[in-house]
Image (cartoon, rainbow, N blue to C red; front, side):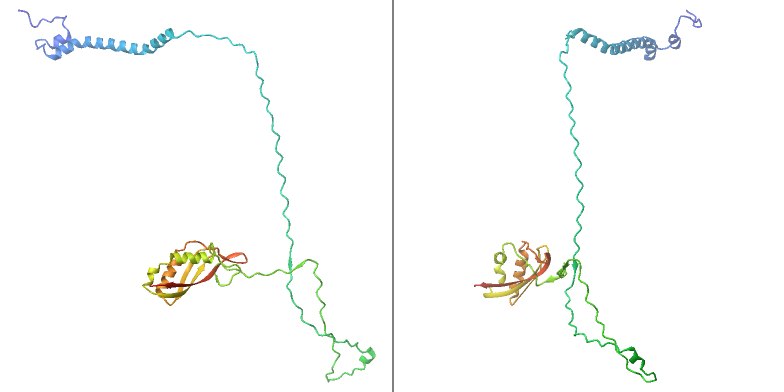
Length: 279
């Protein structure tokens, strides 16, 4: 029987650890095969790394071997192209300075003032001689002296400039509603076209069966932009008045505004209407 206390120096560390144990257990087998697996993995990994690094060089070398030979062409330049001459465009002369503004001729406005008639001057009486003046007595009583002749101012000198009478035009208001103007407001096509639009847009069913002739006067304001505002109708039939106001507001065409001194103003326009209804 072998002595169990005898130590064998040829045993490995794993054999010493797993001595008298179940060596068929996976730990022993794993430890005994680990160095071989590690060496094999290192060699395989190194081979893959070298192959990955060398692959581009191998591919490039194969392409160089399969590439066609370069054909060298000798080219001798015979004609030398001459450079195009650059033609300098002449500089444009600066535009002449604008002429100085003309001074507007000053117009002197002289109001036409009719001079008041002056009575004929009195005949001047020369003063008495000095000898007679010395005969004047002095005392406490008031004495009537010699009155000096009335002074008449000389006429004004004639004006040296050009006298122009300027017509002063009245001031035109933007908010005032005028009833008399220089140029009356006009509807496109004339007042007859406006009347036709009124008749075509008038709804006769709003009269509730009224018969006969109905009259009314429609008043509205033509604004400075040609629009219509402040529409009113005055007549004996209230239904006709209401429908007339609605009809006027439904006409969207703009008028040509009235003018005073060439400026657009607000105008109050009167539009009489007479319509005949049959039952």
